[in-house]
Image 1 (tube, rainbow, N blue to C red):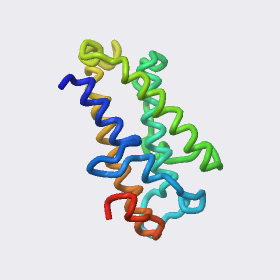
Image 2: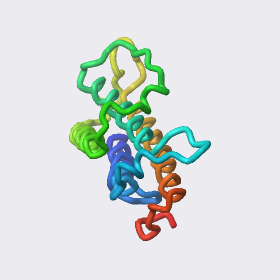
Image 3: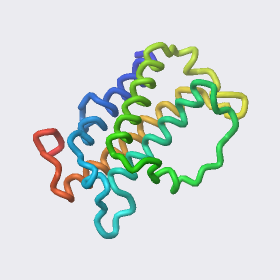
Length: 161
């Protein structure tokens, strides 16, 4: 299997095709603004904050892929959990826009591109951050699922009982 095919399969499983775990789209389906903002005592981030974090990094790498960001960015990772909008539906809409654009970009990517460096300042080949992005998103999908289970808003018929 070509690297591009593998990355596309991983992306699809993380975004909207349930496989061994539920996808981001499934885990966020039906979450209300109130549920998204809920955070139990002792938990660092809400569903909304975790979704903002996924959105921030997924969009950041998309900007690099488009050639819009070349210099390394000093980012306080804690701030990536913050919301830029008070509207949960706008957050979900933006997340879908970014994921759909990534899917489109990945549909044209080939192994030669995946082996090329991200840019002059970041010499890792493209397959590395893309694979890491998929792993990163899968990790946070699990956190969101756990929060939904803790708040009692998860229907096990959707997967991962």
